[in-house]
Image (cartoon, rainbow, N blue to C red; front, top):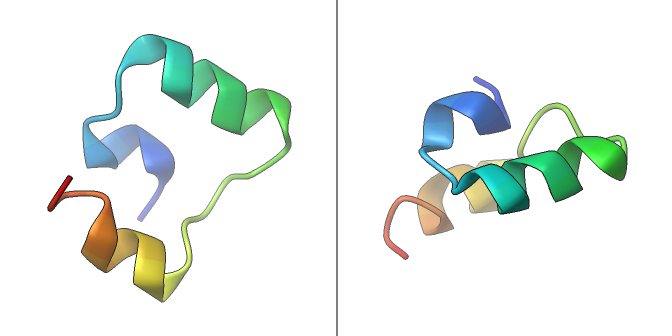
Length: 35
């Protein structure tokens, strides 16, 4: 799973990629969809 599939807004997705993150942690996978 990637950050692209979590439904983040484009500015957030761009910032995540700019920081070099590609795969969310298990905690992020559970928490982000709830937010």
